Image 1 (cartoon, rainbow, N blue to C red):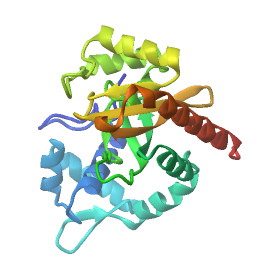
Image 2 (image 1 turned 180 degrees about the vertical axis):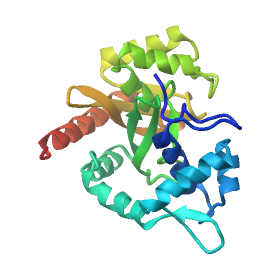
Image 3 (image 1 turned 60 degrees about the horizontal axis):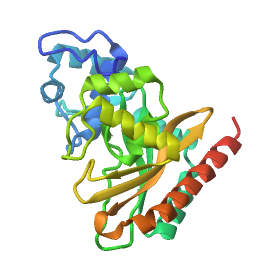
Length: 264
């Protein structure tokens, strides 16, 4: 399964997919710490010919998604900000924040909401509520992360179609830590346990010293997201697992019901 940026051309080759080109250019502008970037800077960061980047910028500029200032640098345009702001009204998990806050309060740990993009084959924390403990794990929100490690990933991928799992495997099961599932049998064994239990637990798979507990969120007959908690291992022991999983599963069901009740 192709990722949206699979058409990203190596240096010297022209991009073939204009939508993918636009997404990559906008992504580079969003991710940049600078307020504006020149064409050559964008081209270097994207490993794309400057002529291709210029065509994309010119096309996006017509609709106001990007704009060029007097110095020649390109930055995000007002139409981009308008769409971004208004798009929040259609956020599929607009009701998630109070549920995350309650999950944090009930468990004392950092609560996270994770979504999955089947085309990218990656996941992203779209929201989190930090633990009030001084020692805590705070995830990198709105960053794309691999799908083969971490409870938040397993709670989703365990219920996805086989072809999507195979695509994740083909991208490589890189060892983020010594305990990251890095073989097909390890990953499938993990997924089988998730399907049997109805929740996922990970220990040291993404960050050393971190434990994750997550439950799948079913919407429209499929799982494309999960909700859970992340905590330091020193605060996790077997006696806690039952209570944590019950609270995480309850939060997932609450969010499912709220999403289902939204007007279509």
